[in-house]
Image (cartoon, rainbow, N blue to C red; front, side, top):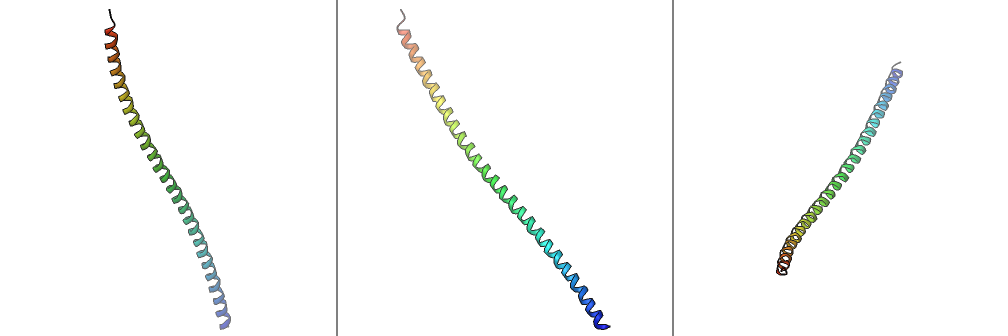
Length: 96
């Protein structure tokens, strides 16, 4: 009678508890998987950000080098212009 019903209820409750624990364990595993995906994506984003930073530094260096090259080209052009004027003056002295 009564103890049999109590045992049956206890067994049903234990099975339901076991099923609930299995669902909880499955949910925890899914959460862990998602956390791993998030961590991986965060690491990839961090890597991309570092790469972008390196590229920006390289672009800045190249811009500085280009500006220095343009300055040198301008100075060389001015020197060539000065030499051309001097050369024309020298050639003018040799005209008969």
